[in-house]
Image (cartoon, rainbow, N blue to C red; front, side):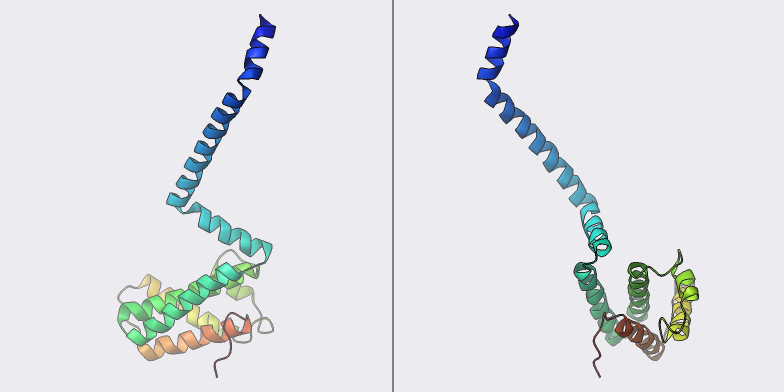
Length: 168
């Protein structure tokens, strides 16, 4: 009886293989779809690319943000100026995270950095303080000149880290 089952199973093994491969592929497809819908895959890929050392995808995203910052300054609306400053601060935070500067928050990282590490660190702290003020006070209106000055400070740091190339 047991040998009959083994013979029958051996004769139908390809059917069982097909069924289990189909079920496995279905579960894989469902898992990938859920990851795509929740956006988990892109975040993980960006994180692991940064960890492994090839930062091209993260750099591409940062350059896209930089382009939107430049557009925001040219638009010269309160919301676009605010978004430009917030974007520059977000890029700085990402750069310092990838560079593994000590500190849990951007404030802590900036406090732990010496002028030998980033030449314009004192100005960066001031620009970050401005970003913190606009984040806490939604009624604070920035002028285009204020925002341009802060963005120039961030740009010098981005040049230092090699994100931007000198345009002068």
